[in-house]
Length: 182
Ligand SMILES: [Zn+2]
Image (cartoon, rainbow, N blue to C red; front, side, top):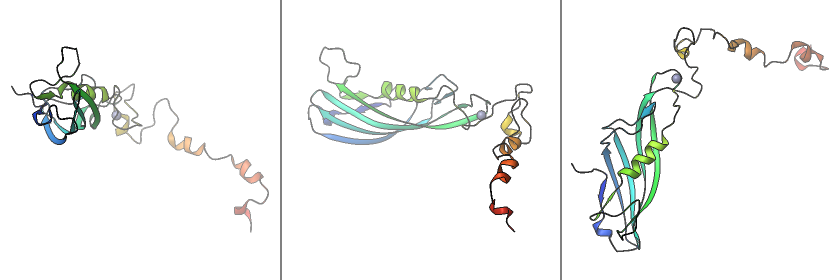
């Protein structure tokens, strides 16, 4: 099966200074990531890449964007997050030395590069929103779905808002508080 990440660079080989840009969309051949959220197999990955011929090989830099889906780490609701990553790597001409990335048969294979960058960008503790209150420890209900419910062990937000106001004695203590004049 053809590797969709394999890019033909024959026109750039051994022509330092030549450069080409390419945009492509790949349907991810496999699931990326093993955590709470991952990029499912078949998900479109948008790639904008720049291929530059240098003396040692082909310098590949670019951006990838896709969508990861999974569950919130606090309340377990389904979530989707956009994933945007940058990458850059030199694909060296085969020289007998060991390089992680090499030009093979007039092609560069971006698969390990993009896969690793995407996987590393996925959060270990994804949340549906930054202040997700999680689940009720007793009932297992999603607290964000129960806005009127008083949390079991934390201060009711209506009272904590009042606590931010100074005590009434402090306000009255100042000489000539403006709203007291008649
Ligand atoms: Zn959540």
